[in-house]
Image 1 (cartoon, rainbow, N blue to C red):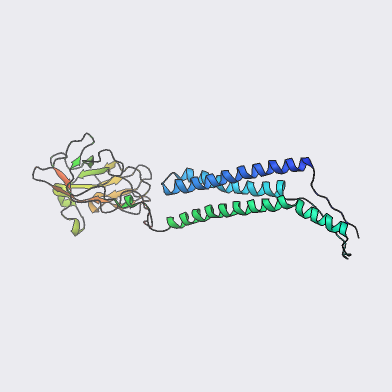
Image 2 (image 1 turned 120 degrees about the vertical axis):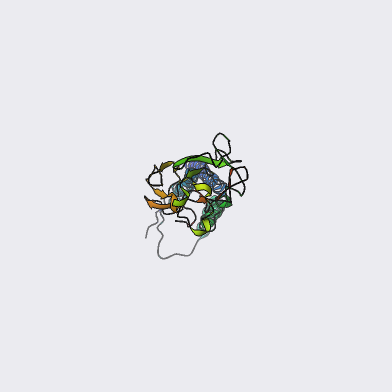
Length: 293
């Protein structure tokens, strides 16, 4: 039987371990900072780009920490011992105690690794909880805001109220609520058609005074502005992906990838002949979200 022991020792090894511990700590703190950044970006509604960058830094930092720990801090040794262990002599026991106490710093590093893993696991758990939250109810109640409110006047981009004599049949106008002029989500296309040609559902029969009908201008497919109106076909066209909507039938989609109709805005005319909103859109404006097609 032979015994072959190859252990790292000497000043060079100590220096290597110190540098290794430094790089491990740097990787760890980068990972933790990125993990905290991910949670902050997620819970404050930041961009998906920042979410991806912080998540990549978090996972990459943890990976580098483990790689550096295994290559720079773990003892590299090969030991072959006899099968038959003879009775220990005093000299051998003293040597064993010396080796045991010499490895005390490795035990301390194990404690450091334990706390690092616990902290990293906590960050991962918080991120998983955040992901689970995303599959539940919409965290943004603003997505369900009505945008328009009952009684609000329809205003042009110049801030002028829209009267019932403003448009001729076959023409359109971009309008906004009087307190949100220029708002992307509130932009509405106002169309005047011949009242007798309308084919709206019965509950919307009085939503189009004198042939004025209004729909959200934000396409339900990808959110592009639906700004093209073909008067001969009474059709609104989205220029991005060629979705078409029949304005006479509640802006039902007739072509293209859009699966939902444009939300309609109920209208009425006040005593001065100004057009006003009879309430909010029939659905949240914009593309599908949170389970909507």
